[in-house]
Length: 182
Image 1: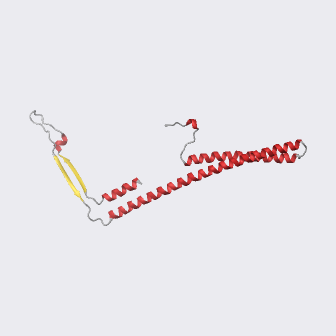
Image 2: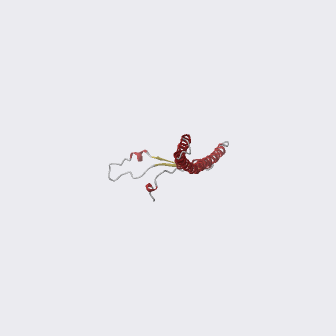
Image 3: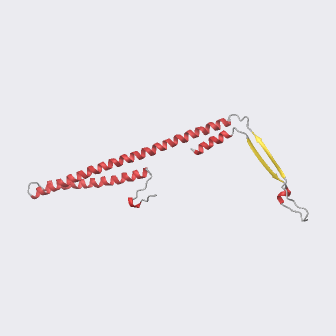
C-alpha cells in the first residue's frame, strides 16, 4: 500500500514544473594546476552553472491516465490487504473453534472411558460370580479398548488443534517456564 501511495504522489508531481541545475567546471579548474611562481597561483573555480525550468503543458492525457492508474493500484492494494486480513481472521477463528471442539471431544472420550472401565469391571465381577458368560466379558473388554483408543485420539486432536491455533496466531508453543517476561 505504501508503494502504491508513493506512485500516486509521483503521478501528481508530474503536474508541477521541474527545476534542473547543471554545473560545468572549467578545464583548468579540473586539472587543479598551480603555477610554479610563488607570486601567482590559481585559487578560483571557473565554469558555468545553468538552471532550466520545464513544465509540461500538454501531454495528450498521459499524466491523467497515469494518475488514474496509480489511484486504482492504491484501491487494489487496500482491497488485497482487507482480503488477507479476513483470511487470517477466518483461519484464527476456525482454529479456535476446532480447539474448543477438541476439548469437548476429549471430555466426552474421558467420560466414555470411565463408563467402559466401570462396565468392564462389572462384567469381570459378574463373571467371577458366575452371573455372566465369557462372551460378555470379552465384549466389555472390546468396548474398553475402543474407549481407550477414542480417548487417545481425542488427546491427539487437542494437541493438533492447539498447534494449529498457535500456527494461525503466529505464536510459538513453549512451556510456561521457558517464556521470559520483558
